[in-house]
Amino acid sequence: MTKTGLKDNGDGEAHPSQLIDAKIEELNDWRGETLARVRVLVREADPDVVEEWKWRGVPVWSHAGIICTGETYKTVVKMTFAKGAALKDPTGLFNSSLEGNTRRAIDFREGDKIDGEALKALVRAAVAMNTSAPAVASPGRSQKKPKSSA
Image (cartoon, rainbow, N blue to C red; front, side, top):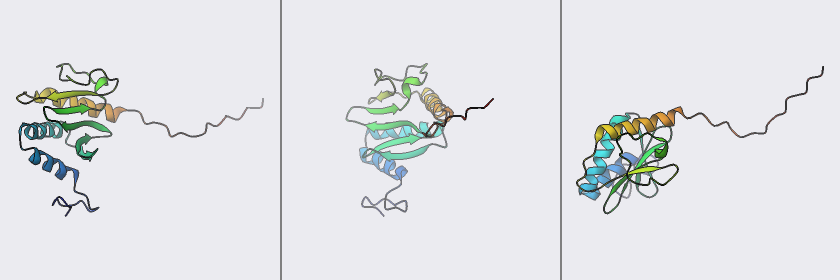
C-alpha cells in the first residue's frame, strides 16, 4: 500500500489507473465527471491505450507516444493532444492552444456536451500518427564508403 492508501504496483508507487481513479473521485464535481467521460472515450477509441501519471498529477494516455493529457483546472478540463496541430479536426473540437506549432487542446467547461464520436476519431487519428511515425535512426558516425580502385 502507498501513503495514499492505494495498492502499489510493486515498486512502492500506485498504478497510474488507480491515481486517475482517485483524482476523479477527489474532484467530486463536474470536472471529475468530465475527466471520467473523456477517459472512457479514450479507452473506447483505443483499447490498447496506456494510462500514465506525469508531471505531479496529470493523467496521460499513450500508445507509441503520448496521445493526450487530461488536465483539470478550476473552470476547465483541458484535453491536450501532443501532436494535435498535425491532426485533422473536421468537427472543430480543438478550441484551445491553437497558436502553437505542435499541440492543440480542447477545453471542456461545465455543462459542455462532449461529441463522443468526434473525440474518439481524434484519438484514433493520434494513435495512427504515433504508430505510423518512421523510426529515427540511431545517431552514429557516418562511415565513408571505400573508394573503388579501377
